[in-house]
Length: 426
Image (tube, rainbow, N blue to C red; front, side, top):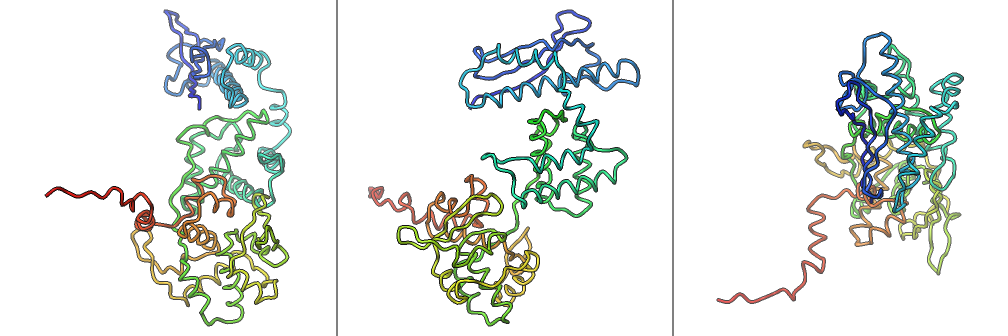
């Protein structure tokens, strides 16, 4: 992968108002470096070397001039980023092509469309329009579930703005906004992963805005504008624990929820796809029964072999299991069922916690991935069944500690290679 950096530097050379020069380092340029005059000059006292932008100035005539320089530098940086993105995968870059793109951007300035959007549309309306019209990598509009997830972030931003003295806009989402929003979410009681989810959605919308020629504050690209993450305190249920669940004496309602949950533990689907676990979606491929699921979140179709447990439970309900209740209600029912199972305790954050309190609908998907992995099924086979696109995101699903991995490693050929045995001379 080519290496690249972008910097704005002053070319002093004895001048009282040095010129601002763009430096782009990319290994695909011959000589590796591209240099370009931004056509701006600035006194050194007005230049912030660390931020590579003009410093704020007192409210006078110079203030608007310096703001104009920064807007121009933002446009130049955006043009370079677009050029590099459009040429992703290209082995060689031509300086003349990037220069032509920058010359055009500087001569025309921000597209008229940007001003029209700002003048005629509310910030939140534009944000919502981006959500409604964004397409995935296959050119398909986002699913309703994904849109609703993104609108949760939009709703949060509306609440945040109501608590502020100034209105939000695409060019004010800077590091000050980042820290203020984070403090606002902490005050609301959101945990690390919930806050991280909202920052992830914000960054995604801002990237999409750039693709639509909407001028945005580029602070979201900084490392410090990060997606907060912590290791989730999720658990999985082992095959022995699932067998125990199936032996419990429960009320008719609890039995139905238990059966649906256990089936999901052998299918690996999200709660939103559980209604598809029925005989109508079982197909036969090369003589093997497969459950065909169209994932609600991604629209992808996955095929999962029908496990004997799934087959038995489907038979119990004549192929059509009971209706799947809402996620929150299902989670409440699961905790009651898990408590009856007396699953013991787990250590979370150094504290012993009743494992039943940690069981949720998502535990089914994690249990499927973890138990399949422990059965020595190939990681990429499991990913095909769960619909995971990257190994890193899949591995976060495995709820195993170092001891679990060590036990599995002990059975590998590496540690059982007897050819390495040798007699030690006495």
